[in-house]
Length: 519
Image (cartoon, rainbow, N blue to C red):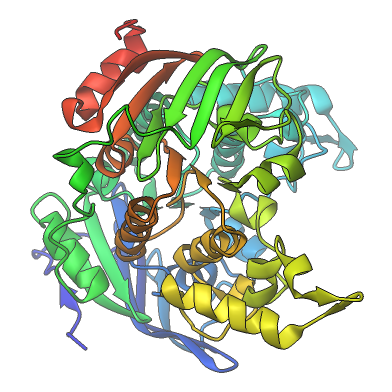
């Protein structure tokens, strides 16, 4: 294990706002933290990086008071301390925005933002109007005054819910804010707005611990970076702008990753129009979401949909899958029309969907990997109402072995897998089903760089074996790097179609932001 690399501080520099030294934490059978150092200064953006399972989540839960460390020292504003509970950490000036948002969906926006510290009269009478005014001011500060403080959180988009969660953290007047994957559900404009907010906070002396798998964001927003690997800090306080991306990836993974996206023979030899499409979408429309959409995806081809949040990307995939009923239009698989708005019919036709919110929409978190993989194919293992567990397990083991899912024990509960391996479990389900069309919505959301490289290789291999793949991603480099052909969306319309090799990120952004109706 390489020693932790520290950035030496010149004489006269004030003591850090937060200093964590030698933090350890074990759970039954698992040593999550084996000696982590983290030093955060006032007014800086300190990026915390590491693959899934490296210890990032455990460390921030220690910082948030949700876990108590087994050993090590925490010094906050110059004084040794222990955060005994999340309330204690919040009271001392530390706010945490988790990747899995902890909003109360049936409550209005204002009540979520002020939850736990509601404005009151005489100490016990809640003042709703004051709460709404406070919420409005915070939302405006974040650049989203259009979010109605009286609206139920359940009615908001994922991006808007992320903004509400940020507003709640800001409402506590924190000195340090931990942001865990804050941009995961944001489009490029919203990410730029997020960065503006972060810069205003740091200008006021607030420190931000920023966690993201998007290394390009780290380069843009971060001042220093700490890298975790296998529960240890292998780099503490490296200057972000003078540390190369390849060095950061090597620290995270323990190896050099020279090529993120796999080589595609389609780049030089694209699928020709003479090959009949596996998936054909004709005039597909869903009123208010997207209109008159034509898509063809041939065997061995990956087609990407690029566009901002709200451009209709997810709605298109869900309509093709039958989870939404179209206003008009048709979907064909291998020339046969698929009954609209009918998920079982789509699955029988050979369509599989890996949704953006895989934990909520695709996975049975408390069930085994075996059951998650076989759930769409159980009839294959059923006899007279009984399931042949041995055959079920053997089939799951075969398909997960092909995808190099780790750990290879398919009796493991899927909740214990990393994000990348959970996504592999979803893919394994559709491979076992024998799907012909694979719909991927944000396939690497919440997945670290090492696991991303593996997933890209898996997706490319599945396409090369004859699947038709339609992929959506809010990360334009991902769409361009993974796809053979790209459809650019703006406000529910395709404004441009071309081979991926003919586009770059700036061109795509011009198209989605300016609405150039090129063909």
